[in-house]
Amino acid sequence: MRSVHSSSLLAAALALPACAERDALNVTPFDAPAATAPMALNLAADGEGRLAASWLEPRAGGGYTFRMAARDSTTWGVARTVVSGATLATHPTDLPGIAFLPGGALLAHWQEEADWSPMDFETDVRLAVSTDGGSSWSAPERPYPLPTLGEHGFVSTWPTANGVGMAWLDARRQFQAEGTWRGPMALQGATIGADARPVLEMVIDSVTCECCPTAAAVTARGPVLVYRDRGLPPDVERAGIRYEQEVVRDIAITRFEAGRWTAPRLVHADGWVFNGCPNNGPAVAARDERVVVAWMTGVGGRPAVYAAFSDDAGDHFGAPIRIDDGKAMGQVTVAFAGADGVVGWLEDNRVMARRIGPEGRRGKAVSLGASAGTGRLPRWASGDDAVIATWLEPSAGAAAIRMAILR
Image (cartoon, rainbow, N blue to C red):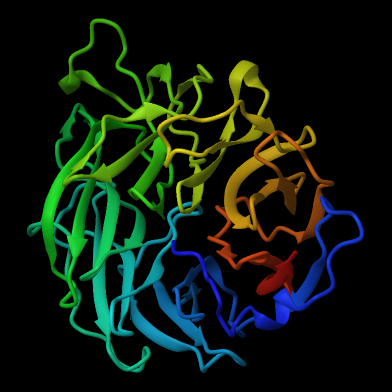
């Protein structure tokens, strides 16, 4: 996600007095859009100071309604419906979202059950465009050719000169055998144009973990993608890959440069061997050639959250910095505030935030509030020296959207 520089949106936040203790986060409440029993909250920002929040709401009769609200420099606009239907799907860590197209149009992405297939776990990524601020939306498209088998989801996006870059987990190479899915889940990518149709679709990594979120950011040398990779069990061909196999599932990064994705490399070799997908993906933020990645790992059966910095657009990373205080649930997010990173994560059923420095410095962990569940935290938006954080908090038996400025 592009950083928000020199924007009127964050002008008031950047005018706040500096913290007495440099590493201690100052938390200032920020108004949030109203929603009815929201879930799957997400946040997007562009380089002009605009924000777009999106979420799902339960739908009478089954399914969900995908809603969004945009904010200018002063206030949130009215919440608008992107799409509503019985086939809309939800997953605690697979978040629908909004991306900004060049010229001010909006691109929405979400996941639907594949109504053309009777098999379990068949889902489609769907896309639509609005040129009027969300009042109306185009007919849904897919970011890949007409229907492909298996699950598709866990989308990440980034801005391009002519549209939006998009990556997703793609199971089209899987097949059903003896009632279970076999074969690899892949990380697929494409550029999405202003008509919501894909161009330059390509495979980024042909074997990945099956259901952990992906994340993207843009460096001075091109966009980077982070995701949970997976190894191949010894003596097992790709056609024999199954979900429930004990293999290493560490975090990988790749960068799009000179018209291709670089060979994936590990952010850090945790060596976490896990049977099944942990549903806990990484987060990434970038500014120029600086990159910070946050992730959860469970080596030795002890969940922990780490982050690491790169000063060469993701080619190399420094030593991991421990983020949590011992009761980590993960579901991380991360953003830049100046040269520092601000990491968000779930711990002991609360939403936590902590400032960290590239040299390993850790600020005090701050609780932002109770967590409404164990789902993935949304993206947080970066300003020059501040971060806009958002999360779901329990409220009246359901949830409410909360926001704060972290400085």
